[in-house]
Image 1: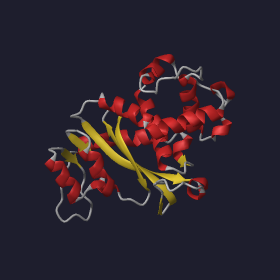
Image 2 (image 1 turned 45 degrees about the vertical axis):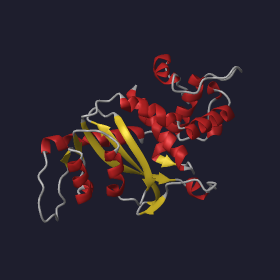
Image 3 (image 1 turned 135 degrees about the vertical axis):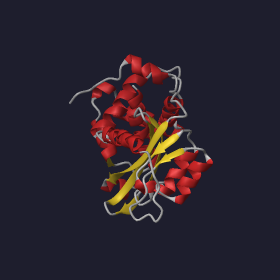
Image 4 (image 1 turned 90 degrees about the horizontal axis):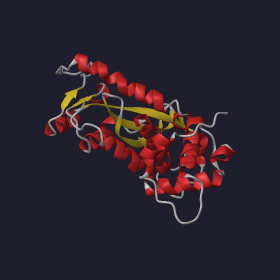
Length: 247
């Protein structure tokens, strides 16, 4: 099985956001991060990490420590902050099937973000991206949470001039929020709407960008099937997959 190593050029963009190494000699963070990416891409267990990256216990313990500290979230936030604020944004969500181990293992009372829906026990990734296919923000929720309940949080904490979404986001609450924030909404009305609401069909065609983003990150097997019992671990997995899209 291939053992790719993140390039020096790409790693230099991330290095300054990682905790500074102590005086003791330790495994290079570049190999550690490459090992973490290998696990997520292949959907493998930590014990299966090739020795090329170092000891699996070292890689796992450093991932766990960085995850608790919110390091991966800070890296994604840094890249997202460089994006143009007044842009055309797309919002959508995607289900992630939860493996049996994610549901049955002890979570030590930590949030799981798992819910039962028609597809079984699932989580949901709510994602916001720009027209260039770069991630702006995301939220993990239970699979049975409706998009309309999560979308206002994503919209409220980000800046954009227009948002493109499908019919699931056609609600009075979201349209009122967009009007208050002076954001143009390109959201088609539902077929049973009493009052039809027009939308820019040419702009709406750009919505395929976010669908393509979901396709790219769910090629990573660790995101296509969730095996993490704790929400913060799965959240870190998604952060890593998303900030690699900036490379």
